[in-house]
Length: 77
Image 1 (cartoon, rainbow, N blue to C red):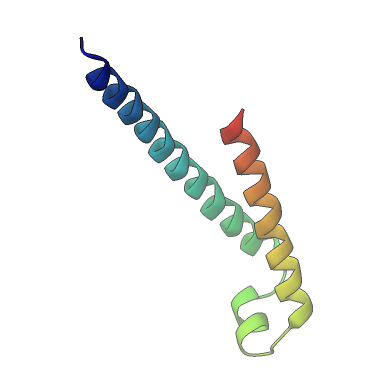
Image 2: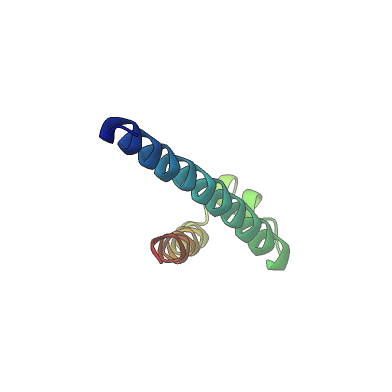
């Protein structure tokens, strides 16, 4: 097998693994947001959009960043 073909096969494997990890990460992210909205005793969308609740926006942003760090750590090993 020529060296160029082997490099393409390895790159395709890496690309496929990256796509799978991305899809799993997005699924975990969406599930986390769904759980977050379920455990809150109020409507998150209404609080942020209508009532302009900045504190809740900061908490949601922190949750998103924390979840992204966890997913990135799981992907990197």
